[in-house]
Image (cartoon, rainbow, N blue to C red; front, side, top):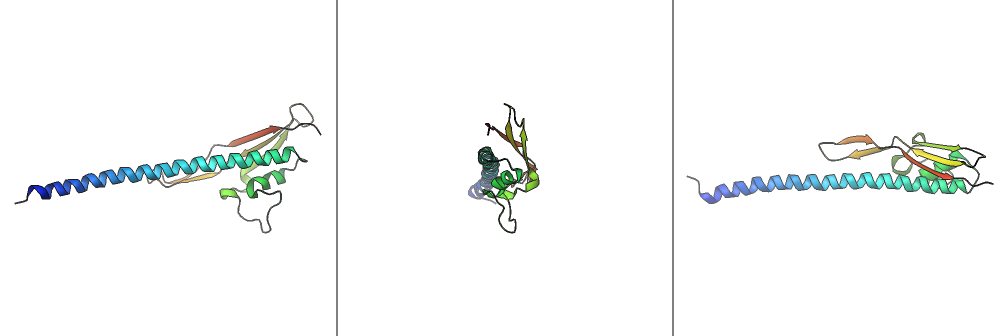
Length: 139
């Protein structure tokens, strides 16, 4: 015959396992959310810096791409990997309204991946396009 204490130990073990699963899920979800926010804000900041850099100089789309990818106007020798996995094909640079009062530099970053670790949604997803523009004042 079992004693009352043995049954309570089993119950405590099951309850602890359920609480641990919930806690670990919350920790991983917080990590995933933090990663999404970090990546998105990092790309926004890189795009803003690149557009500011380009607005003060002669327009060159390749220089803007390099500022986003490598944080310098020229690509490093051998190309190297872009910032947080970005590639040149993910970055679109354009100048709209050239010579008018609506002259603007526009940078769009799209197709960048997020990798989630939470088991129920694990995989790769793609973020919304990031668009940054700045008016260009006459030369």
